[in-house]
Length: 88
Image (cartoon, one colour):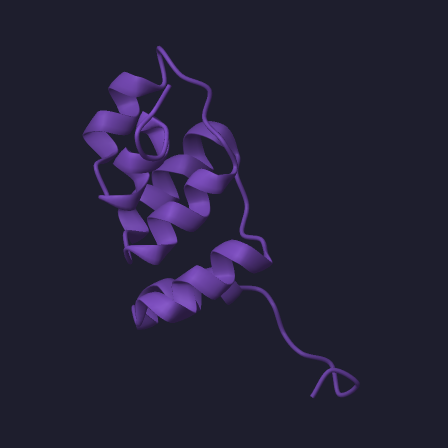
């Protein structure tokens, strides 16, 4: 029973890639970790999650990236995504 979020999500929200490395041996890494890392503007943690667990950006994590105010993270979240004329 956790008083707050599970440890993996806590580490992601704090940008603690070192803790993610340790905790992955004991806990399941949830796709929600992307959103938690993005909400804190922790691009290094996002990249670690992508490399180690093949997690991808979804609408929730992209929204969290925008809310974080981290321009580099927003660019990473939408990299390779281009609006067609129909989407504008």
